[in-house]
Image (tube, rainbow, N blue to C red; front, top):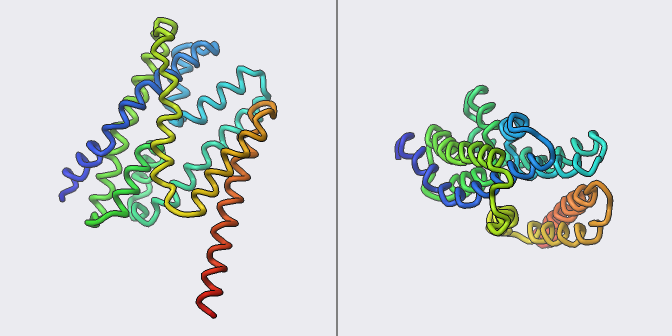
Length: 238
């Protein structure tokens, strides 16, 4: 496989997510306009952040008159997954130049990361240049549709019939991303803990239940993994 073919392979592998990204981004454009943002501010938020979950979270909190600090902190916690994504990609893309890695960081989105890391961990292995090309093939498909969908939603606004129910895209998108990644007991424990904690703490103001659920899920996943390691070590020494 050449770098060119790797790029187009990444492009093709991410293509199915267009069906989710378009309504997802359009919904953000509609919600942002309903919240009082003009088209320029709506687009500025999508272009600068490129993270649907944190964008929706910050926008919702600001609409609820939450303090700006709380809105920013919650959005930051939601986006901490990007730091985990980056750490997971270092073994595959850490060889790239600083400028290239900076562009990769800007373009990173959930869907493209999930597709790219799955390919990197599957045979046959890609060369360093092919891994970079594959990554950009994934990202270059998702981001333009995110921008375009946001613009369409911001301009059309209320002209989009409520019967279309484009809000289906959010849960479908994250189910499609999370479900294939539940490949070990710590993953499953963390996922179940996050759901349970979110239900328990859903009554907290300013969506603080999301912060609590995130911390609970991370702690449960880490403790489960440590328990499994200790158990394996005991078996080894027995």
